[in-house]
Amino acid sequence: RGCYTLRYLEWSVAVPTLLAINNLPLGGSKAAWEILGRLYPSLFTTWAYILASWLGQVTPCAYMGWALVLLAHVGYAVAVWDQVEIVREADPDLRGVRFKIGMVVIKEVI
Image (cartoon, rainbow, N blue to C red; front, side, top):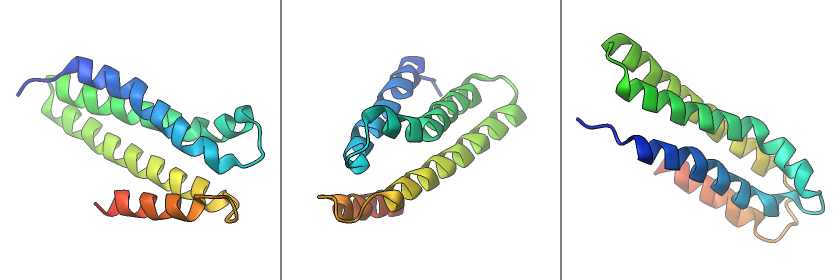
């Protein structure tokens, strides 16, 4: 099975960018640098699990490949947990926060 390296490179840029864009409205009156500072753990974890999943596909050792893919799944779970915490920290009176919470739940269930 082929590994599409350029797709992983695209994901390593696009997914953290989408996280930042989606979470900026949850900051309310906070400055953008404060919101991005809170997003750094989630952004780094996302980048790391994308890298781990790519490395799991290209490594010649099957055991190392499975370990890296498992690490990618754990990283994904940590990033999701952090996103849920960011939504829970948001002011519930902000416009669209309840919708955002619903979308996070639906995305993770699907």
